Image (tube, rainbow, N blue to C red):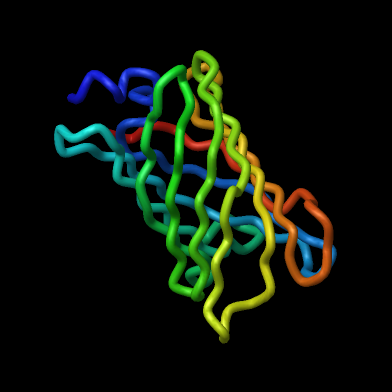
Length: 157
């Protein structure tokens, strides 16, 4: 593993779990999630996230969002994250790593002509008692930065 990855190495592996979501423009929902962080020896982590809607019994109903990208540690525990979504949105986040907590804010959001209106995001990731916890706020559909999703994931590999 590249030495520059040390501040974010706690993310490595495959994580699975469940969370809750909602937004002023949609109904609340429960979702399942799988995240994988890998590396190839270079100074970045590859990232893929998949989510699916869960019914009241916790069974999968249908796929929800997917995103992929790269987490790029920078000097002085800073980090840059580049994410792409199949819905026509690309995000660049900048943030800071403090122990096992990472806080990110969008620096750039680009959308295709057909993508939904989305203008900003704020993400918080943290390792709590061995589990990966995260929360995501977004500004979209004319709404200000508002809580959208959060989850608790367990490392499975």
